[in-house]
Length: 271
Length: 67
Image: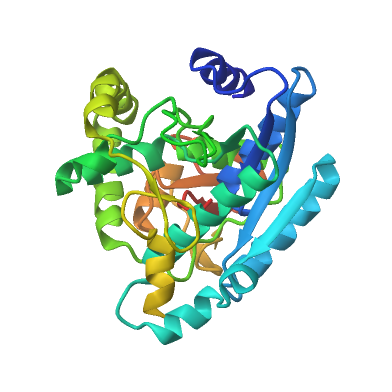
């Protein structure tokens, strides 16, 4: 599997010589597998790693997985930085859920987490931000956006990044072609202590439906998921050119955004 | 008897052994498939079309998004 990931990195030049790669690590199987593989590769090739963890403040789940991050980073000799919603925004996700009963937790969580990952990776001087999205994640997202008619999101799930703005740290997804199940197997075979459970707030019914559908198709027609990704990759260069929007700076915090204020500030005002 | 430990549900179940039973049959009866679970049989990762033997111990590990 390390070879396959290496191939993907080479094919799309995801990592360049002397890069400092910030790895988004949650403690879940994908991000720890990603960290483990990148650690192996960094011992042979000239690049450095730093693990960046965002503590959303989800009791009984995130605190558990963060202990795993710390344990594994210590074991593998990787520097680990942890930032929390509480420190940066003033609320844990548990508190946010109590304050706003209308918007789903995921709506806040995804936005805040990505905002922090990008900002901190940039402040730490990272050249790239690596995240653990696997084949299943990618094809679910591709299909979801396509079915929902969200074409601007649809144009953003590519194999290589297009740098829209200097304040964005380019995101790379080295596990993009690896089926989720293989992440589980890799973790087991290599005895990596990972968090196997799912977020207590996870309830995105739509994505679950898509996941079930794709799993069913894969069982009937093996390589469905991979072919879907390949088809998307072929049209991605056209999408990326035509569907991305212009980026400005949030008048509140200065972070890159499409509107006047960024989504993070908008959501914080909501609270 | 086959002992099945479900990691996600944090439960243990006992299933009657019968000849010709495969791992994929057990998965199906529990609401899983080869796409949604990895199975360890007596401590070793196994594939779906393996036959079960009496007194086997299975561990069902879910393939779930999250990380």
